[in-house]
Length: 304
Image (cartoon, rainbow, N blue to C red):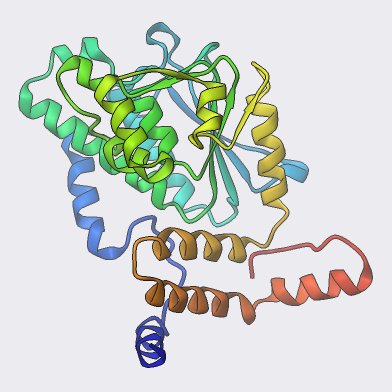
């Protein structure tokens, strides 16, 4: 076992924190799927806001397509893609929140009226691109938080599942109803839901298309917190501020160690943890943490 640990450790010795959300081996596939339907035109339904002053480091993506309850069409997909790419290149971003500006809905899923006008090949391309978009979101190196008030259904829930944390209001409604439309969740739902709530429960929810409320979502571990209706954003901001105070490199390495470690054998995952810890040792932030502790003050991290 010691020999195996050393072998894996050697293979990771030259790891550098990546600036892209996807490893190089997957970039070509992501870009190919992106180019199928997207362009660089600005989106009217997705906006990016960087908080200022003491909250600098927190970025917020807002969904705003009230006429269709934030249903995901081509414009919103383009906006999500371009926004996530911008965040992946922003070295000052420490934590991301995704929220809705439309009352009583996070995201109602796919735009079925738009979908009805697509050919089978266009639907395939759209869903493949949506899946790649949520995988890109999941692979962002910073912590991500979904702020759920109201409905998060189909692709809306799949987007939330791609985030690290989920905060909901008590009146939230979540579900994957695709089997009722004679299809399956195609943007990661069949893979991420069982990893979060377990295989048997995920099968029940997907087979039946059953919708659940905020309190039940909390009880099964689908969300991290369920708060009184209308207070999900405040709770998410509280958590984001807490995260934002921590060392940026440590946050990235902790996320990498957890996410990638769960996909491999424990021997390899422990070697990965060792390498991620190594990345935090020779940093100015670690020295600042020690100095702040000695001087009994809050540390001022710079990400160096």
